[in-house]
Length: 387
Length: 161
Image (tube, rainbow over all chains, first blue to last red):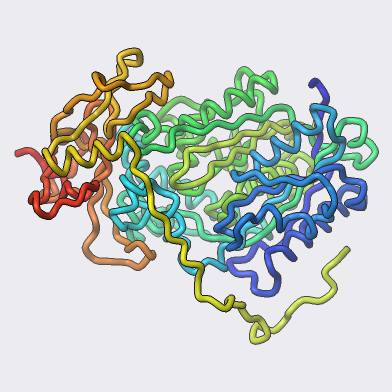
């Protein structure tokens, strides 16, 4: 089980607020084509196994996992789906290689959220049918409750949350694939209409369509396929209780993130993440989540993330750049593909292929994803240029 | 392996609706041994029940039949009346409808801490000054004849003056 696993190819398609030209399966086909080209032009016949991350209601089709193989070149091959964030799918793909069962495995995820006429209703459908759903309210009130509790527990301010939005939307201006780039002032965020107090409408990331496919390989095969392998040094994932009623700890802090990161750090041999990791792509589905996640990931203490943000620590030229890509607030939220989007940005930085947003002298990066309201699931991955 | 042609005119793009408007996903739900009893106590006796795990020193509200920490079964003797008062653990003012439409009068949602549990509910009969974490609140039940055995048998929580 000590086999090393590398990312040898990555490709994406879409990244639009709507994508009326392609079906979701064609979008995955295009991302797969780019990914396989990125891995030296490998043909899917040479890929041993495939893992898709998806959720039936997003596809609008039951047993969506049966509709995976053809767009990946996986017909008559081992295929399965993970109903979870795509970093959980990545973990599954990685384990197949670590066990020695497979040598090359593809992992895919997508969002075609623009095809959903009532996304908020779908999120409501994900809440408890007895204790939450009967109120018939917009499910993002859960984010409002979380944010208010987080501010209360840590002394973080509403303005510090707004600063996450201005930072990430500004960062997105240097990312050609980011949709929501903008140079805005703090007041544009704090004075915007309220969604669920204290959460404003710009504290929430906008929807994004797109697909990402990533190719993983064992050390031996990785060396054959690419001269720029990015190594997966550690991975971890965790889920807190689904019951809002028992989230005494989990309402104000991201317990799932703390546990996921602990596992990933241990596997990667990281003791002091702030010093040993160079940058991070961290879930910022909501503004407060970036700060809450930074604290849970032990990159700073409780209540410190907002202050460090104001000091410029998480800016592209700061001590610990966070979401240089623009994150979800600047780039758009890819739903179950959120994790692979964070991963892709980390890979591009480590390869030195991040264009105008390229960081200098980066060797180790962290990607972290959360599954969104109303879930309490997170997954963390440590990537490095060194095996 | 490539996409050779793409639609390049918006007017050529169309969305396909299947022959039926939407699949009518209609479920019924089983409240279960714990849920059934929890809601019947609210409906018949205006009581909120929790269940106590002695090992973890935790009282779950709403009551349930197992402890999610130690996985112990919570027996009959573990069911306790936790009263109808709690404190605001968090609150929010919701300015959008379920479908994401803006609205002027917000819904005020609260997480009410009772023992070690959080009941999610509405706040009623309050002034702006009452919107405060740790504020004591009390359940206001609907008249008995209007209760159905559900969470909405509690009309809302209101501040204790």
